[in-house]
Length: 242
Ligand SMILES: C[S@@+](CC[C@H](N)C(=O)[O-])C[C@H]1O[C@@H](n2cnc3c(N)ncnc32)[C@H](O)[C@@H]1O
Image (cartoon, rainbow, N blue to C red):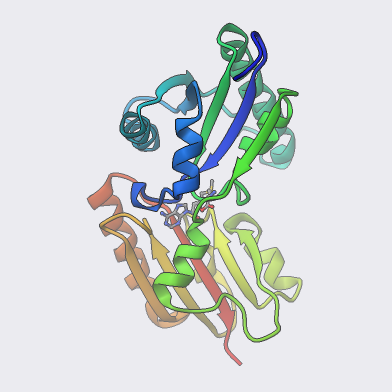
């Protein structure tokens, strides 16, 4: 039981499909007085998915309009992200002040990968815990039945934005997320790729092969996934051929 007027936060990984909600995450959702979810505008598919999970578990969802992110100055990407985190924290803070209790945030995949929720919640200065979820990168490896790295070697997890610089720095085994433009297609050299879109959805798409041979199959599969689900997110493993 929470002391009157005192709140705590649970950051809950939900995987990439309702079927991937772990028993631990489900129990954590059930323990919340309500869930806060960012509302990114009409037809936000991830908000709809969070609503469905909350309805299933029987917990109220409070949608909070997501503050706009300043994308005007690409040179100050980090500054724009920090401002956006502050604005999100302020929006959540005002809801929690009005409604103290145990508050949950449902994070797509695993909160440890390319998600700002932990950083935003740190700004609230409340007690919080984190429950893991099945990440897109775990799903990618499982669907392709591969280990993400060779024996005793590393794997770098990065973004499409950073891919060219990471390869120039010598990385040759990378998982790439947040790459809507398949930046790998512009790399020099000989690479293998294991690619997946909308992993976990009934319309997930998988392509694997020598990069130069499969780029157009990937682009077509990406459009099929978007048409089928109304959204598309893709992740890939890229390894230089030896
Ligand atoms: C904001 S990050 C969130 C990552 C998430 N926290 C995780 O653990 O998977 C979004 C990126 O994750 C990847 N992603 C998320 N869901 C995916 C899915 N169902 N299939 C393929 N990639 C996905 C894509 O690279 C997408 O651009």
